[in-house]
Amino acid sequence: PTRRSSDLVPLDTGTYEAGMPVIMQGNPGNLVKTGFSFTGWNTNTAGTGTTYTQGQVMAASNITLYAKWSLSTAYSVKYNNNGADYGGEPNDTTMYELGSAITVAGNLGNLSKNGYSFGGWNTKADGTGTNYTHTHNLINLKHRFCGTGRSLLSI
Image (cartoon, rainbow, N blue to C red; front, side, top):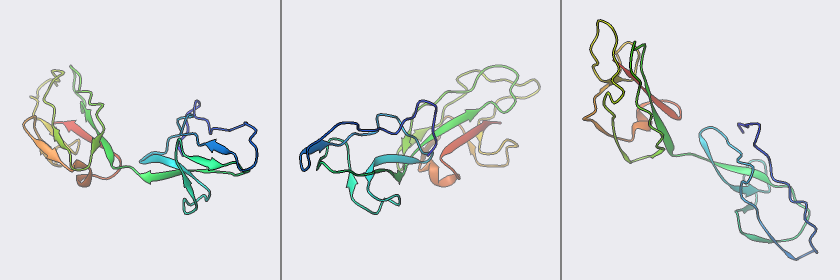
């Protein structure tokens, strides 16, 4: 997993009587794995054993559990000013699910570059990729590019 200095694997130091119920913890340490979503705890490192989720009750026993991850279907769109002299690119903090419509932002930050006029957004810095303008509504943008984040560069 990708770890920040504040990420901690939870450790339950409670003492329980054998067979008594134990309430499963979630992800209180904010473990993160890029491109994946935390889906619970599993008795097998490969996630093929018994899965436990937050709030589930299990019988007390000594057990080691491993974080279970599933491929995330959410992705973000990042706008890049592509060398603009002035202005700022839109800041889109939305996490989009596959199949959701995305309205491409316009030149909200008044980007400008000496000798050029803003022409929209493109998937490649040199403008040879796919062009998008603020009038485009996109669906399934994730399938159009590789990786978990999508970058649109000003052209």
